[in-house]
Length: 135
Image 1 (cartoon, rainbow, N blue to C red):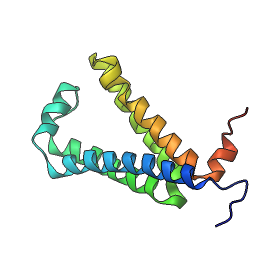
Image 2 (image 1 turned 180 degrees about the horizontal axis):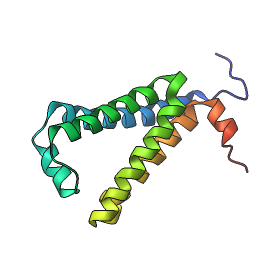
Image 3 (image 1 turned 45 degrees about the vertical axis):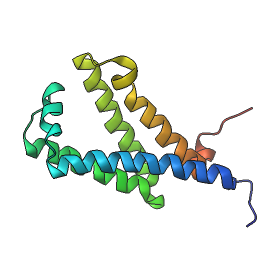
């Protein structure tokens, strides 16, 4: 397979796929436990100051699964990335509001966003053209 200047190297493409896959897996797991009504969800929602009803967690879980799906599909990946960034920003704001530990809880959304942006940047030439790194 020949590579143009626009296309990522084989290594960059696979690193991007792995990073993106980890993000999709995380969101799918998080959304899945909310839809399944896992016993830890109402407890955690309550600790964060959110309603503990199944309906509240159901909507958040559906949102997470939808965003994961949008991010996983190449044609909608950028939309999924933007929505995911908003979701993770809200999570960071929630953890800041309740005084969660900074590096393990509050900044976890930032870590995830960096993985998500990095994963898509490595595998999507159009995003690299939009956000180039200069030497």
